Length: 333
Image: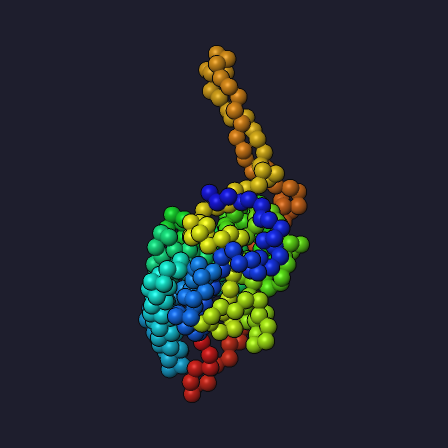
């Protein structure tokens, strides 16, 4: 279990200005890194690199010329990305940095995506693993229901849970519907919000604080102004702060558990005893903590979503016209 203790007020207001707070950077394949310069910043404790992206590319390439060339290009990109990932892992660990990997969640089979992530990242037991949910639009990103199944499959494969990376709006939705999203709402939160203060915005619920707060990215870091500049990295590098010092972050790194449910979300009930013990009168009443029953609003929300899914199953599918790709090359991939 991960302790879900409440964060201090100072952890919600520009904590990166506190020199005692540990920092973490995360990168993807197109971020350039000067490792020698990066190593000079002793506040940087961890390096989290993008691993897999949605479903793996098709194993066999087929189709017309454009589709075949697109498939080959995707395989080439996959191979180059994986080689760079493994190289960065070796370099980062050689420099004494803690290592982590994240999966960019897309629409599609969540079990296959989880397997793709584990097979791509090959995480050691002390490597951080994270699920990157960029939003709550299932047409663009993995649905929250599929994300829960992704988490279950990762746990089946590795015996531990990932950290959840997401933005403020999605985190708030999960917190408000924590009875429905029992797993997502208890994953350690890697919170993405690019404001100096988050005290009134933080999605309180099961979460009483964050594991990491991504406070700097291309959104708020430019040539003339940036919350924190990491040596050896471009302005678009993502930087996160931890609510702890470097030594403690190294001890807690990888996380891997579920946060404790706050006491106000628990109810105590007497533990049943056998009939024989009850008749003999030789027993002590003990109590166990269980999750409280859902509220009326939570029940209405869950039933409403199930009804809409049931109703949509009887609708005729929408036939979309897919424009043909030009024959002279790949537009994008």
